[in-house]
Length: 279
Image (cartoon, rainbow, N blue to C red; front, side):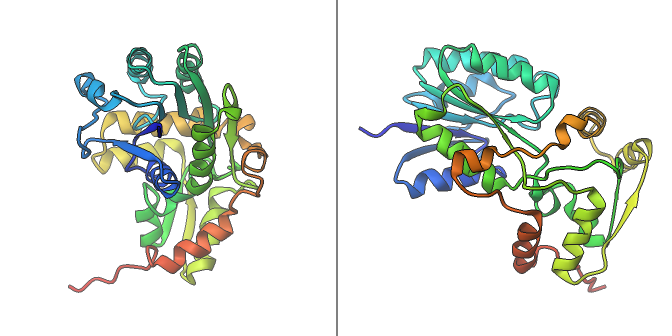
């Protein structure tokens, strides 16, 4: 009898790739998201029970980040419910170098279920699917922490590590740090994208205060701004988070995807083509 897999966050950057990986293997997969049926909403614990019924193994991505207030309480309640529902294995996506995320990891590790923890660095796809896309399209990317060296991680690598951890018990009790094969500054990453697209895209260093003021002027929510301040100050500013790991190779037997490879393949999709006004 096939086991049933649940991917909470199954429409997100890593989740949808994990879903695809599992489906390619012919496994039974349920997506946990607001748009799925039954729906799963982090803000409404009454939706969790139906999604967890008859699930054997699950991948958990907390939105927007395990560092935000309320994440610890949500993960605690989810683990208690999952245990009661008979879930056997949990794989948690965590943040590399986030103290608050590590508190949530402890909840998973002490849940009484088998588990694997997957810590990831900043995603390559932040430049093509998330908050850095619009600046790339405008031709100027202004960010703080210009000296930070970041081992940008491809979501494809994260998804492949998560898939391996979900389906194989040899990864039980392990903590994997998923990084790219090298570190880059924001400016170096932007230059890679400019090279791949053949466009002129500049990098402008700004202070963290200037960056957060810009987010406030853009009308972004206060909790969103808080998260960015936290990630820049506590995560990017920590030298321990600028270390390259070999865990992708340990788990998958191959090298992680390099940022230049990501940039070249993403440029081919046209997502970074400069928008031309028709007015």
